Image (cartoon, rainbow, N blue to C red; front, side, top):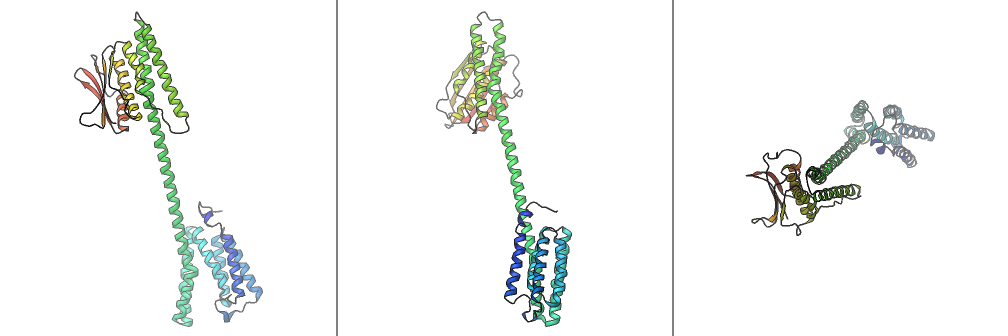
Length: 375
């Protein structure tokens, strides 16, 4: 059995239509309009009932075998033309033509269109020869109404259905693309969070663990290791809570989150000074600048232990609606590679996510990280 997506919905009322055509035939019979020519109604009652029953059976079979139904109906109309023609049979024929144009194969559709066109033109010519031009025009219009109009309507219905299916397919494709992009964005965000938080604390722990070996007073360093370990665990728990939440709520870090990283830097001799704070800034701005500053401090501790680090937060003199973060540290003999790792890239992404910008690079004998973001 041939089946098409959407056609089953379109053809679901076919049986009801066939029964309705049968009922219309009975009504025409009762009104004395069974044939096109009321003065030429020669059928006895049982023949009319037989024709209506045959038309009903052919219409019911047209859903599964449209080509066969069309051929049988053409034969029945040819026989009926000798004593009729009967109006209910032509109504049933229009339904079958519609089904062939919708459900038939391309070959069946071409055959039906050709046969219906030839019949319409042929009947118009015969009518004109037999009764004049007026009769020929009327017969041609009847052929158009019962044979060609169903084809045109079927083409329009099929085109509308295909356009609807194409639109649905495009909508599904767009939804899939948006879902994939959303998943990718979330994965990149989690990657940045892991890099900027947990990785920074773990890096500080590694540096402190190395420093504690040769220290005469390891208690301060051990305390810093513990604080960074607890901070890393706290960050992990926060990320787990975000991932486990039903909604899209995101916990933002605060400026005070830098304390473990500052303590780690101090423990290896990198004195960190902080000038300014973010107390009056929105939470999302505070979170971005905190992440950038934390990454800069962790990098300074890792690449230039023992060198001073300054963190400055200030409004731009010429742009009151923007704030600048500057993290500066003395460079060791070998300057860090600005393109190495993900740190600088993550800084830029975070700043750009709120309409700002960030950069990092050497400036004289210092390594400088700058970030400018709107308040």
